[in-house]
Structure formats: structure tokens, C-alpha cells
Image (cartoon, rainbow, N blue to C red; front, side):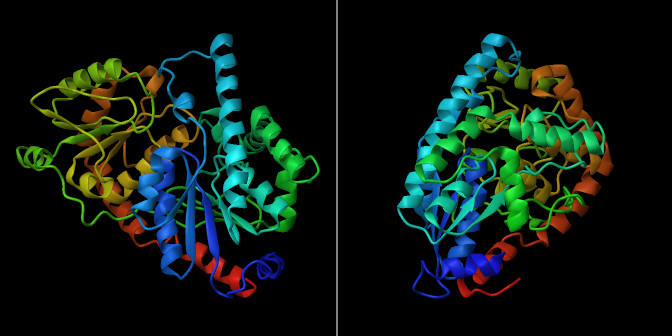
Length: 432
């Protein structure tokens, strides 16, 4: 497959060996930051890199020396519902409307940024438009996914918001059903294909087409955390995490330094981009959980706007996880792919508070790997449940022992090398 793609690639770039790479990184900061880290490694290998993301992340991209291209879309609309939202008809109707608007904006944005120029397109897993846009524009593409999207018998589809397996055959069947059920996304795909003069296609046809082409998809998480499923097709690989850019010149606020040194290592608590606008209720809940557990805590505001005023709690804004997590006693987080990876690399116990999508899957892996207690679903969160989970994470030595061992394996991996190598093959026309 790379031979065919490489031949087509060479018609676009007159400078053999140098490529203009466009990374589609629609999502939250936790989604975008790993792609910026990946982009830096690709740039260091001699290529030029543009990252296409939503407007709030323009500074993150530019300050790390990469070109920024804006993709429209209000992601906050999709993650702003309350943690205990029911699946009522009214709620689901609103969600379908928001999702349709978001996918329409992003699909149009992917086409626009690709038209600005690229020799190869790297497509994130959250929105699949890049694969089709690249075909229409006649440029090669590869998948760079942070989550496992391909159906597998090893786990149920992340789109069903659960990690509860119902058997190999049923898991795979549900995986195909989940992809086929994304009506707003599939509609936008075919709108784009019509504009690009490509025939209509369904999601299962797309999977079949990619299987025939052996379209490469690199998964940016550790095989030590989630092994590559044996039933995946050729061309799908699990290569290791892509870490956010190192912030070696970052200086922590003195208030944080003083707090860390004023007592035993605190617990970190943060929910990232989850539950935007519901900070007041969650702040009170987190404060009560900290008191119930009898611990000190560093609480990160995140999109929820958490704020816990207490002598033994410090509320912070953006702080590099690679700097902070090794200094805490445990990490309480929403089980997003990026934050989970950062907690595992730090080698500390993890308490997962998953909400939806891939979060229940990563939460289940935390338990399976023996690095944290059973997750507490955000929808069922109470001060007592969260406080008890924190106590358990700290009281059981095996969690810290297992976390330290896993961290050693994760730190030894280089998830960016296979992607850079594949780009080299594209630019030179070499076979695998």
C-alpha cells in the first residue's frame, strides 16, 4: 500500500524526502496536545508540520513551533451537559442537533485546511473526514488515533460508553453497528464526497475499503496498557503514547511549590474538559470527598471550573502533568486517553471517574492493570464514593508497585518513531 501511496505522493512534493504534513486534531486540549508533541518529532525529522485544531488551541500549536490552521466548531457544546444527564428524548434530540452542527463545521473545516496545502494528511480518530478529503484531493493519508475505533471482539465499541464485554462475536457486531449508527457524521462524509466528486459510501464500506488498501492507522497509546487486538486487520498498529510538548522552561507558581512542600504528597483531582459549566456542584462534591478521605489535594479547574476553598486544598489552572503528577500520591481524573497516559507514566495510583466514549475503556484498563481501584462513574459520583476510592488507592501498596512497574515500560517506548518512519517511506517510495 505504501508503494502505491508513495508513487502518488511524489507527484505532489518536488523535494524528495521533505513533506508538508497536515495533522487533523479536532478535539479538546487533551486530544490536541499529543498531536503537537507528535508534530514536533515529525518537524525534527526534517518535514514541515501544520496542526489543524479548534481556535482555543492556536497558541498551544504556535508556541511549539508548528503552523496552526483553524477548524471551526464548538466542542464545549458536546461536553457541557450535567454529569447526571439522563438519556431522555428531549436530551437526545438536543444532543443530535449539537452533534450535527459540530460535525458539519468540522467537516467543512477539514476540507478548507487541506486545500491550503499538504503533501500528506494525518487523521485523528474522533472525526473521519480526513480520509475522504485526502482521497478527493489526491494526497496520501494515514490514521493517527488516540482511541481504538476499529471494531474488535476484545472490547465493546467506545461509542456505547461502556467497557462491559458481552463476548467476542457480540462486541465486534456492536462495533460495526455503532459506526453505522453515526447518522450526522455519515451524512457530512457524503456531503464532502459529493463536493469532491467521489461516490457515496457508508461507514462499513469505508472500513472494507481501508482493509483492502491496508490504510495505515497508528494508535498513540501503549501496548502495555491496551494490547493490539489479535482480530484487527493488517495495517493497524499500537505504537505507544505521543507525549505533549515538554515544558522544560515552565516555572510553577510559588503558591503551588509552597503547597507541595507544606505536607505529605497531595492527591490530584481534575476532570479535564468534562462537565463544562457544572463546577459549583462538582466543587462542593470534591471538597466533601477530600474531607471524607482525609487527604490534601491539588484541584485543577478544567472546563468545569472547579474551585475548592480549603486550607488543605489548592485550586490551580493549567499545570504540566509531566511536572505535577510524579509529585502527588494519586491521580483522580476522568479517564481521558491523554490524562490516563500521563498518570500511568508518572507511576502513581489512579482513580478513574469516567463519563462517556473511550473513558470507561481506559478506566477498565486501570483496574485490569492493578494500578487503581474500581472506577466511580461520573453519573454516580458522591463524596463518599469518591472519598472511599481515594482511600483505597492510597491504602493498597500494590497499586503503587504496579504503577511504578508499568511506568518503566511506558517510558521505554517511542510511539513517534513508527509514524516518522512511515512518513519517510512515503517521501522516498520505499516499501514496508
